[in-house]
Length: 101
Image (cartoon, rainbow, N blue to C red; front, side, top):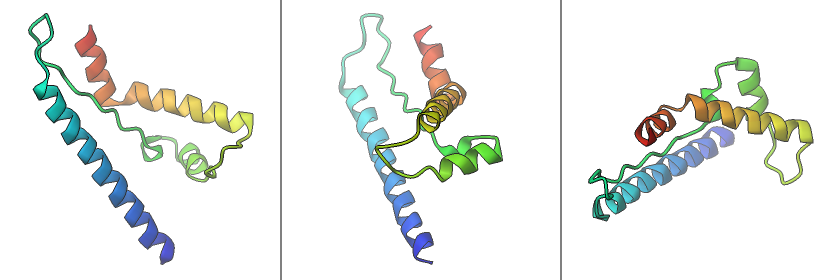
């Protein structure tokens, strides 16, 4: 029960933090003058989460990686690979790439 309560609090804090960041960046972007191309500044915030990993076994592995400054090299390599994959699959990141093209 304690895990469920603390997990909910952490999720709520993270959600609220992300929403505050989105709102702050959007306000900042609106306050900036347009680029020389006359396009307004766009804000993209790709959100990466282990819950988005399609493979259940991989998702389970990453959800059980301890919070530590000392991880085995193999775990670090898997984390980097997962981050790359999640970023490539992120709709916000794809919109950013399309905007930059």
